[in-house]
Image (tube, rainbow, N blue to C red; front, top):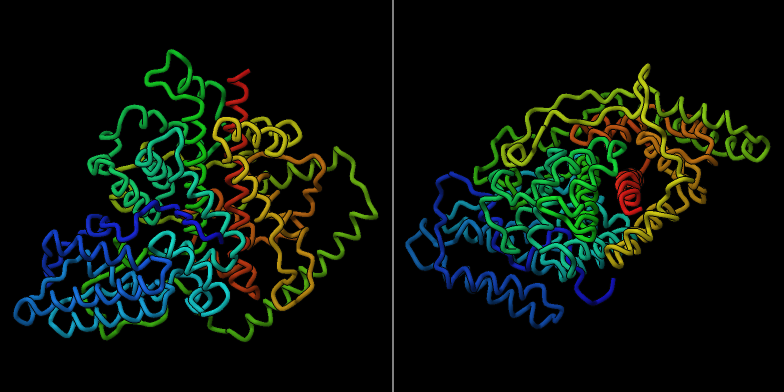
Length: 558
């Protein structure tokens, strides 16, 4: 990555103070409030830890350590003055900072505080993901460079960054896009951008992103009352709710009328087209990122609600994550998984040969598309009610995804990619209304579509193009988008049913994704390959939602 700072999607300043506000706990413990000067000094030290100058970082680390030690010695044993805010900052650094000297010192300071009678927090998760072993993402290696760059630029390395770091080329592009959406000068003020992302993430009950963007919203100067319910937000922001709902769950229903109600001269309050396109990309990005968060089973951040506790671990604490399925017959599963890989490899070769030898009629191609989009794939997993911090930001929570083409019902007209596509229509419209954003989104789509390491499970030198294309086109098929030149019979050949269940759940009902669904598909593949599949689902879903909205805007502008 370049040396200039690339701000991340959470928009949090280095050493930001919001975790304390977001993570309020009524638990009575010996940590107390620090004076304003103490807090200011801590925040300043934390900010300097992100300096690119090694000497400056070393000095800041020493100053932070001295400050903590002084405060630990101010009062009698058991009543040291360390705020919850400082303790959570130290916990986060001890868990996720890629700089070993900072991570080690933060852990040491927490141990010292505990020895002095301070009740210190501990992380409730062993790693970034409940589905993926921590060693996959926390190992030392070449990917550490991009994690260090993220820390120096953003002031933190969150779980999304850790998991995406399995694919550094994509992560670099993702961070640039998020920076442009949330930080670069544009039509919408910074705190509005984060609030729109909060509204969007809440549609999928994604408390992870709700907390991330709530922190960014407060850091950007937003009013805390807005986070207590949509009714406290400005009318103009609330007017996005219908579009937010449709974008999240049924984008094919978005019409020119929805756009007109927001931007026409008589609309009150009125959105400019530039403001609206900015809001649309923010919402669609947050919806698709929610799919990624759920699809990778991301745990709450150590300083988020649900990510830490001040209670000591119970003696009966199980080391195995409750999200990870216990396989009774591991050896048999390895055999079955290996056979699945061999079958898929054989199908890919046979499919390529068949396509070279045979040419389907257009009628047959349409029939195969219709068969694929109307196939019944179950996704009915019932979760508990979302937390209150999410529910209070959702309007009409019963509005959910419905199959584009339920069996026996009249479906909306299919969107033919040849009639309205990203390459020929959407790209230029976004770039015209929100300069450079079309280019950034296009780069992201291209990277994820072409990303390959020429391997599949235990096999090297594999051309995975047909598999990647089948995944992308299957998601667009679920959203009613058809490519005239694509044979949808390939989807049925290459995507076995357990993979379809995962993909449809993640793309359409992400909050229903479970560890069992994740572990059932591609059982012999690397976790990095599953993350790659998640990235394809996320970006294909994003593009599909954008296409329907951009088409409606195009019709309005005619």
